[in-house]
Image (tube, rainbow, N blue to C red):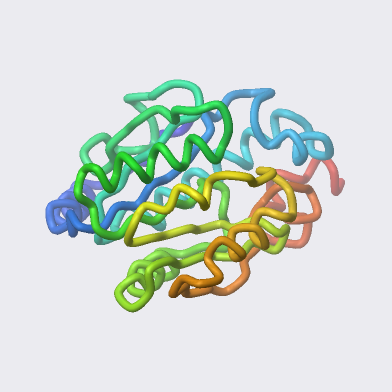
Length: 225
């Protein structure tokens, strides 16, 4: 797994950014430990395990890039075990282990703990969104100034971002996670709440999601040749 390389000026700049972080805002980043033969199984079915791993590592690096300068506290939640020496710089990211039997319980626990620690605005994202920028996340936090919730719809019927000002456990119950009903059921829960809806974006699950994107072509040479 590659380690991001920075020159001294870049390290100093990032350190300054982190010390200015607004402690009232918290970004939760849910990630899978990148290991061969684990994760991105639907993508791996077409591109193979090794290519799927390299693509996921590429997406992880992108997520670091769009979050490392973000004006917020940041917590990385690992799926299997906490890695102290990886691309998530310990001086800029807190690290925790996901807790729960399914995705809903794991996200609920992360939000609940964040509000118990007196954060006022909490947003969660995954770590496989190439079609996401720092500006998008900043706009989501800004949306929470005038709304109680913010949702980023994904093209597959789920969501790539969820944020709130107050913990609402109902959002994490009675959902069939990983299916195209998650967004619809979530918005039903929020029908009487003041909610901002972001632009619909595409997450990376299948070969079709990346086959026409130039940035992924180096990982697909064995298929396209």
